[in-house]
Amino acid sequence: MRPVFALVAATIAAACFWFVFSPQYYVSTSIIETVDNSVEPVLRSAVVLDPVLKAFPEPLASKDAQREALESRIRIVKFKSTAAARADQGGPSYELSVLHSDPQTAQSINQALINSWRAATIPKSESATKIEVRIADVSTELTAVNSAIAHLEGELSSGRPAEPLATLYEQRLKFRNEIDLLKEKLNGIDADTIVSEPTLPDRASNQNKGLLLALSIIATFLTSAVFLVSRQTNGRH
Image (cartoon, rainbow, N blue to C red):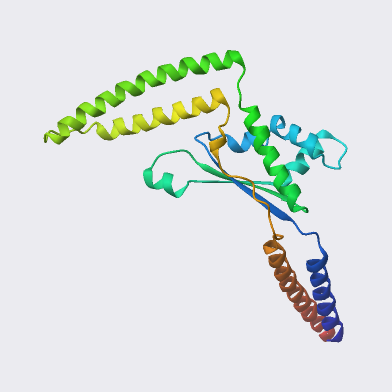
């Protein structure tokens, strides 16, 4: 029994030592609201990451390894804001988080990612012309839909049925979202898209460390129990 208790005590002591002295990470968070659904792949692309790496290089030899190290610091969570969900309109929101052992650096990398992303969204002149043409076409379609909605809503107020209204409302929302997205592509991401600037964390994030400590202790007891049963079984033979 004594070896078992010694093993349990030593493992718990090692887990506690790891919990106290392992590196701490700070998390800087920002919130992005846009009708663009390609935010995450673009933010993780080389065209966005490479300018950030120039300002905040990772201590690794190859460029690919540096990109992977930077990507490992990034967390992106997509969600629908409460206001947009209630109105059943608007695009998704994104929570962009950056982990680093230094809180100021975490915030600076988060801001650098946003700046690089916005710069990468500005189109070339040829692409800009095509976008302008598409905006004009969609605006024409939106005007026609708005006219049809106004006409049918007039019929509805007079007591006549207006069944196509639901479809027209959907089309209007679709055209509005497309125009918003095209304007973002034409002008680059607007500053208003960043609804919450990168935060400066004032404390380390320890929630995962606590979970891992608890799991380590549980695993220790399970391992010790198996070891004890095995010894008792072998002793009987």
